[in-house]
Length: 220
Image (cartoon, rainbow, N blue to C red):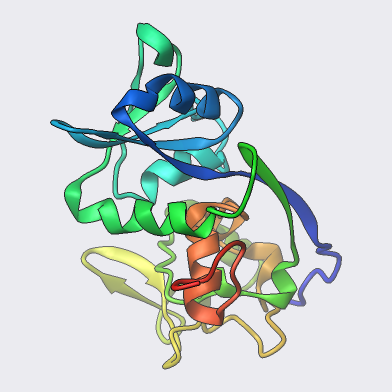
């Protein structure tokens, strides 16, 4: 099963993450309404992420994945005040480092959003260190393609009751070639199909695994 070579670089408009004090609540809301992500630091309740309402019908929605990358699944839609209609998520204190890293990364960018070009064949970072869980639909897709072995050892194994693809010693997916091409691209699992390019998870993987920074590198 060969790789579909026609995977061009594509443009992604991502949110710029900015820090705001409690007194800057209106500015934070304006930033979020323009498409950015605002970290609002409240003196009593701590940090909150203010962002455009996620589109839960879109598995690649970047606002939704910004929330998921903080280990959160729930958010509230503000019903009043300057943030009315925006999504608000409380940031756990154990996640403060994550939002501070996002803020520091974007400190030199103006505006609320930024358009970036991503060429996944020049990266492949999302294929490292990620645990790809296989569901029944994925297993059936492998079987229809004549590759049922992909759902069992040595290509897959069970962990905590979930069936998932195995990783190589370097933490890369076993299906990833040296040229960053997926050997099962046409029948890749749904988790791979819906992985959102340009998401916080994507950007952090590129930075941590390959030193590719879209924004300021740590300490700069």
